[in-house]
Amino acid sequence: MVFGFLKKRRREEIRAQPFPPEWLAIIERNVPMYARLSEADRDELRRRVLVFINEKNFEGAGGLEMTDEVRVTIAAQACILLLRLDDDDYYPALKSIIVYPSAYTVPRQERTGEVVRADDAVHLGESWGHGAVVLSWNSARRGAADPRDGKNVILHEFAHQLDQEDGAADGTPELDRLAFYAPWARVLSEHYLALRTAARTGRKTLLDKYGATNEAEFFAVASECFFERPVQLRTRHPELYDELARYYGQDPAEGMRPA
Image 1 (spheres, rainbow, N blue to C red):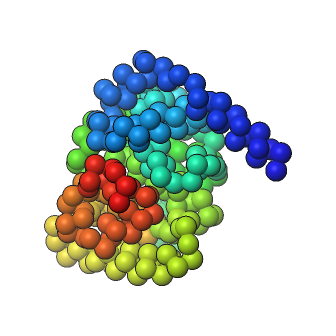
Image 2 (cartoon, one colour):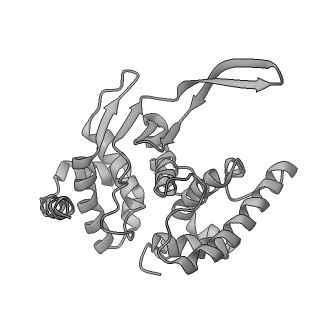
């Protein structure tokens, strides 16, 4: 209890600090989505960025030099997901953000019967349940630059972090009320299965077909689309849009004002 009180007070002190003007310039330059927020949400985002950067460890990998531009660009987008979530939610399990300059490789093994094949898989980002997010800076910057293409590796990987907060990467984050779980399961399951069918038959889709991989990837892909292509998502998949709007507490199709 004492620890929680001290943590809350420390965060209040951090949130009250002036926001560095050079950080604001980075957000305005690199995160076009910021311009779509209401003034109240812009203020809240800046305060959350201050806490996020204070509490999380940023590490450069593969020769990347860590700079404020990298930290602030990533933090601002990660905190867009948190704008209407609980005040204490700053991705509690997350300790480090590891950033490579570009796509990176990860060793992989695949077994077919008795044959094991080893190679390297190319990654743009990963979310680990034990305290880290890994990102490609080129992909992160490119995804942020076009806020309407439906592809944003930062939103994607931090949506995974939200999903993993209850200990399971299953496409269902912690919801506010027990009564919300049944409609969430029905709507997201229906849309996930429809995306799998579309991916198998080659039908064109609004949602990235990578979301057909599993339920966790579906939630992350749907979250990307919710924030980057909200009008199209609301028009073509209104039930899915409504579930995401209720969870995130945001209505980005209406300029991210309260739903």
